[in-house]
Image 1 (tube, rainbow, N blue to C red):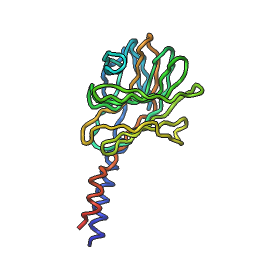
Image 2: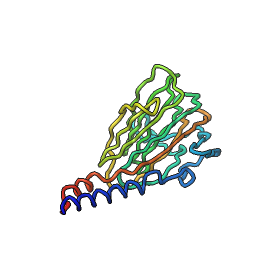
Image 3: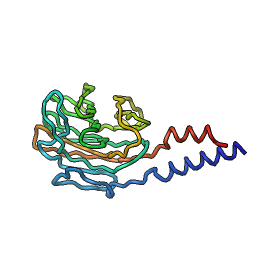
Image 4: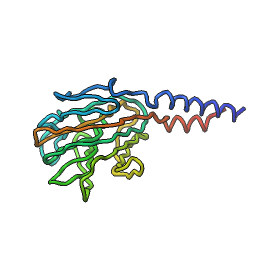
Length: 220
């Protein structure tokens, strides 16, 4: 009987996973700071990035901005999210990637950033104030894939150049059990805008780890 009940519990978790996998579509998402021009074609979103726009809070530079385009859906619980990113980067700080956001004081933006003529893998983590970490690339890249995994109170950020081999670039704290907005952003702090394209954006629900462990340990 114990084995049977445990199997039922695990089946319920699997059913929950199936319910949420692949549920979102680009057409059903929302804009924060909608750009003047954007379009959806199949599984791709293309936008003309708003000039003189960015996300940053206070530290080092002494200013706060929260005005770049962000196309998102809202999720609760734990998940894996992935997107392919390409851009026609032109000037210093042109950037495009994935954003994971609770509010204007708590967010992560991560992706590719063009700095001093070089491509960088970039992550900004903001909790009241922003920090910034980069991995400099030794060559230009046509595209990058970003993957984020939310587990408990952490967000793990990975990058790939081929959507096969992924490498971790950051592990950052983010409040657990809090609804979160996740999607695609681009910013152009210094320039007059550029074109960015995001493809195959997908969020996959992950069964809550604490609940799953509890079900396994309390099957009777």
